[in-house]
Length: 631
Ligand SMILES: Cc1cn([C@H]2C[C@H](O)[C@@H](COP(=O)(O)OP(=O)(O)OP(=O)(O)O)O2)c(=O)[nH]c1=O
Image (cartoon, rainbow, N blue to C red; front, top):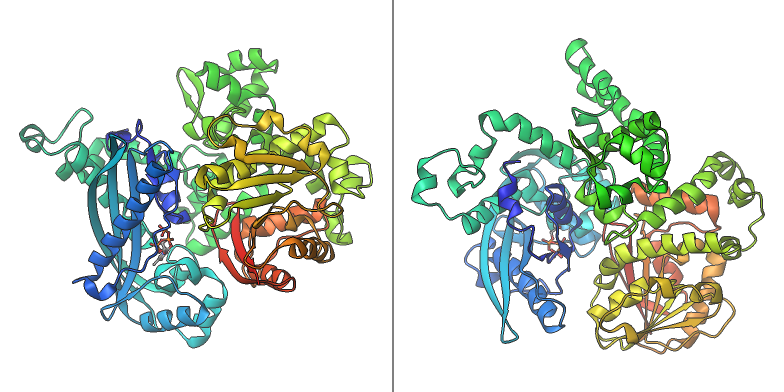
């Protein structure tokens, strides 16, 4: 792929994105960049009036965000990164800089200022190349900015408030998200759309080309280079012959979103997807009077109707360990894979083709091979393996969801229908056999490991000296916390059946001694002493009555100044915007007495037990974080 040489220069480097913004992560993941996310703790408090132009403020903030991460990673003896990328997006109107609103009134103030007007969105970006000399961090900074003009329509007060109540404005510069509901407010955009969303990808690639391929006499004169583009020809890479093939490949790559899951738009836009695609695309050109929106509606519905097929294809390929075989031995032909896993050739070929169509595998004349994302997330020993959760989804959640209709009619969990036994106690049910227990722990471990960094860095927790992770299972979050906060000691508290089986999941390396395991039942037994109590994916298992029992126990042992860190998928107040979280709430219905809750609901529960100063950090990925303090 012709674009590869630009981003390909970063492949062998340890690249860190110093940003918590899920949009930035998605933009860079979608173009195949491999990077770690370490959100910056730099507070966006530079004196705005000291900058001659607003973009200078954005560039300096981006630089400080990236430098803070580079320094922290170097000082805390984590391996010094090679490249740290920082970004800062601001909106400017009437020479005023608007950042993220602090509350709904602030969002209203911002949106009112933008109402009916053209404004500018600036993103400043800093690319920091790091090296370590005599244990000192050395940095080379490259920075730039991009401006995009956006015009809002004339909007009614009612519409503005409806938009504000959706919850969308809160983590976005200027109080709107052009990529989602906020797109409805916008009359036109002049410039790079992705710049508004938080990352000017095109300008970034040009900068990389400038850095890694400075223009030489030779390449300025010639338009075609084997694989080395020069800066001023970067746009030309999409010229002529290469355009169509690159575009196809690029779209193929974007079939996987940042979580490695299939994105619906990509399925239905991709040339090589199922026959459903053709049926959907053709009427747009062939039938008179079929409006674009009328044609889009069935594609969404068809995608939902087909969702279970895609899930099951993924589950079966995982159960058969096809991704593991391909990681070790790929590319392989269907016949060889069928031979390895003991399945029929014709069935295996169809499954492999389906997986390739879904973007999980690549199919070439040599056979099938894993994509990078599949190697990372779907093989059982991948760096962020979700294999355990995929198997749990197939063996445990699938039978429960088969009984969703009964769950909705009765309003209760369905363990008895799915597994033929009454689940008085959720966890006893999970642990009735060694096999089920290990499958459940592997599933919980895979999600905890994947989300640990996001949760651990959602807030600056460096003031806490001891933490207790209640229901902390294999200790995946605990181990991440002690890496990031070397002065922290974490006790993982969980049922004896869990603690007895944690050894398999323990990492080796620095700081592991700071994690200890204590067995007990947090509803019945005394809780270990700590400055910070962590409840990650615990409260959503329980109804309010049980949560009150648990929070009153935590409150009783918490001294003033001590805190609680919750990690859950947080719903918006009106419970209408985040389908992943809303589906997760259905998931809790079929198997527990719990549910997902909104930020206000968590706040109310916490405040009843003396926890105040409730701060919510929406991460937009699998888990959001809430921090509060005992007063
Ligand atoms: C205007 C606009 C902004 N945004 C987002 C992009 C940025 O994430 C955010 C601006 O805040 P930033 O401070 O630039 O970024 P952040 O706080 O999300 O993440 P970090 O500081 O860790 O890098 O607003 C949209 O998603 N859509 C939009 O239309």
